[in-house]
Image (cartoon, helix red, strand yellow):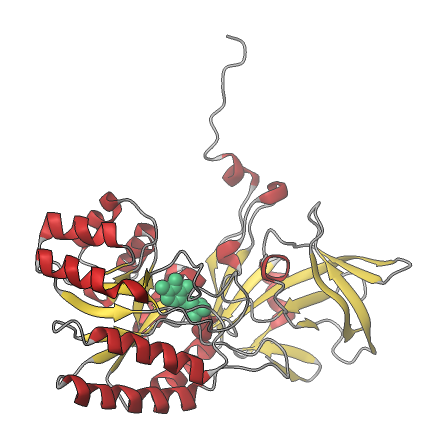
Length: 412
Ligand SMILES: *Cc1c(COP(=O)(O)O)cnc(C)c1O
């Protein structure tokens, strides 16, 4: 986002004009930022053969999927519908990883029929795979290395109490099942959570994974998941991706010597690719002074961006309508009948009724976690490509809210 001549622009498009044209609240995504992040990651790992699989649960609009395919990414999916969306967006099935958790074996069979790369995370499912397919379907196995990568328990998935993966203490069991059915264990996988700030801990996890991999001769790759952190505030720590890339590459090359065989690696960035590319724009309906604070009440809420309330996530807020206004503390709150504060006593350029605010870092897990709570329709989505804004999802209406409801005959 740039400020030129008193107007904020994103990808060369005037942001206030977006709200005038498409209404508010509005999700806006910038293609150039996604591409910048992709290239940065790609360059950081230039030292080793790597495949970048976009973890699409962060943002699955098919136009976003088509764009990340265009710039060279594969896909990481966690449900059959994500897999189907990926196919619709033009991905080859074998460029799509399917990493389900606690799904039925029927769902796994469908994913196999569709041709996706299978990544399983429990022993009973590996048994079922062996019984039904023997070694004919390559599979990778999600391991829980029991490291705490960062963030809190809600977003960290590698700790001992996590429901994800097969514990590193159970590798013997994986070996046993693999031998019993002649499974083709193509890779080992880990995804330790959403906030990697400490490269050392991440590398420890990678080391643990690759040591476990020595038990499997069939391995062609290691998948180190996603969780690369992007800055949410000016002084925020982020994953040092260049350092991680060069150190992980070196570690992998050492491991190849140990194994006496080569492998490639996979990365599954979600947030890293799309978080900074997205903004949620909302209009201020009310400015209200209370004994505690000055509230700016906006025409969106936790129904559209749940991260502040759900994860205590920090999202920067810019007043697009008053770029040079005197900065003073405001508490920004949503319109939902629920406490849905986006920010408390935050320094923001003076907010007036009718102003448009931009919530930063809204590209990942924003629209995807939106709901119809309070019977509010979900926002429209706009995608900025090559200096042009495209509507890629229309705003919902009352009819959309009623579409799946079935009207009973109450007279009977
Ligand atoms: C969610 C998820 C990711 C992406 O996580 P980010 O924090 O968005 O990078 C990667 N891999 C798997 C298996 C996931 O479930």
